[in-house]
Length: 212
Image 1 (tube, rainbow, N blue to C red):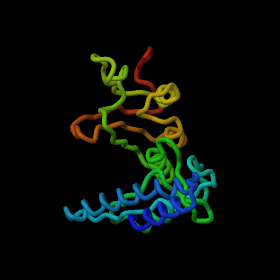
Image 2 (cartoon, rainbow, N blue to C red):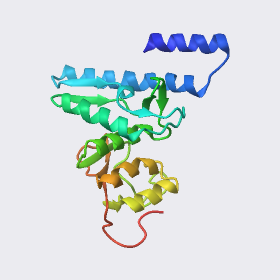
Image 3 (cartoon, helix red, strand yellow):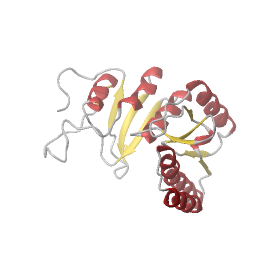
């Protein structure tokens, strides 16, 4: 990955050109390094793990920087791969994909969560757990409102509304693959493993305003 980056940057320097296509190739390397690192750490504690390059699974159009997955071929790739490799933990790179020519593409803002939602959809998961830096979704931005409370449960439509109005914790497109298969989404805190986070389901738990 580092050799690849060196070559890419040398090319950018010589040509004086940094296109969306090259940018996607550069951005992909961080994801590939991350999955290798996580898989390596799991192996060190005797947990069998594979680092998987999502470019071999998720196939998209050629809209570099904000590519759209081609569902039929991506689903076929994912289901076939997980059927063969179900005896280890597969650490799949998020955000990155490839077009039909094998060129690197990226899925745009919140692309890693989108990748996870696509995998959940294709594999008919019961629940998608999204680990982040906060303990769920709150009644207001806790960085701005001191007494903001965590919301225990939200509906997909409420979460989608929050995402559309700018809640950075979620992106509207991440929710779509989950709604299609009625897969629950749980927002959890990476640093507080005892916390149950916010559960997002097809049904709302109560009426009224949830979040400002």
